[in-house]
Image 1: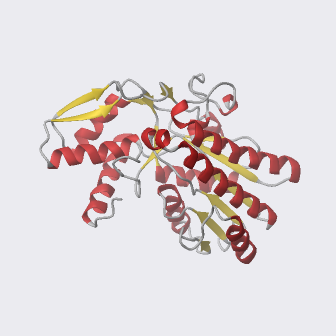
Image 2 (image 1 turned 120 degrees about the vertical axis):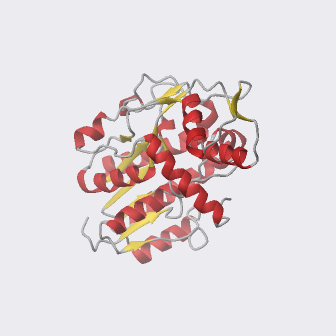
Length: 314
């Protein structure tokens, strides 16, 4: 990408989009287009078409999405499917109609089968059934990446897809009910510490294994791929390392300074038993993460405290 190229970051207020914008600006890209949800509703096809026709961005980072943890996905599957499919199709189609040079679509590792061989290679997509607790979100993301592939195949577009593992870091969502596991733990343990609670109860058995990637590392990868990769196969974004949810809880509690007991509610779901990405493709392209989990959690906790100070937690 030329430093003066017109770049649209969709979802720039979210955790991923804001990290991508930070990375671009740090590298000297200043012709960046952004719109808040109030300024541009990506679910409104006419509005999206008008925006692309007027602004004609050369490059698009599609980081906008409706996201949430197990509870949010289980409670509102129809909303997750409709909102994500509509905004994806609108943005990707408008980019193609208006001759966008290149688009990067951000998906999620939840697109892979529940019982996929571990670590999960890009090729295992659609080989067996999905995890039920986030099936609607996964189907929407699969549709987005497939549409990119079809445009590449039928019209010789240059649209690539990145499938990140569980993300965390600055500008995360710490909502009590709608957040993902790591930010939810940060909030829960910090609250328990402040209120001197003797114990904290976490969902599931704690035995499930998860991989976590610091969001600024993902942003670095996205810009790297936009400059260095074109292809019709998705690229996994992760660390290649995993941790049990129980060990994650202990690590977060230590970082926060909570010394009470950690209990486990086994009546609640664990989700997918294991979800580790094969990151050999990204490595072969020349990219590797730099932020280890313990350091990343410290940085995420600092972000949480800063947001709490300014009453920004939703």
